[in-house]
Length: 186
Image (cartoon, rainbow, N blue to C red; front, side, top):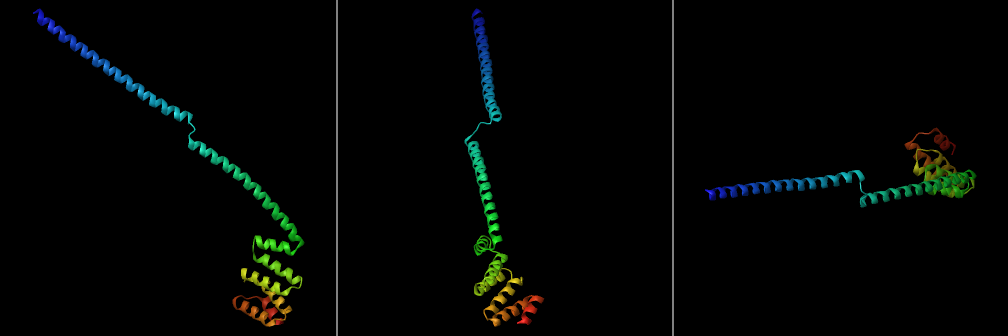
């Protein structure tokens, strides 16, 4: 009986130790899981709060700085262009051929070609004047002023036939009393 009782006590003790071990194991696992989850949570929160500068952030800041530098360079270039245009306008007021050609080169328009044609006509270079009047007319054929200048230059060059033909072609497309009067006066 004593032996039986001793065996029973040994079994009860082993069960007690096993339960205690399992309980300790669960507590240890719980603590480890808790610590790991807290570690990752802490990492996430510190990354959100501090927003560590990554290489991408550094690259973005460099690009922003380059854009700022480019913007200041562009402002300087715009100022230089504005000053250049003001100077060109001052030269244009003097109405020199060089000024007219600069304007034509920078921005070819009907008016710039017509101004060059007028300049040559005024200085009695009728051949070149008729050429520039033709260029102006090609840019805007509805405008009659370039055609009138072309006609006057051709008349000065003793080419009335070409002048009349050009006026008649214009009148086929457009109606203009000035052109009709000029044609009748030839």
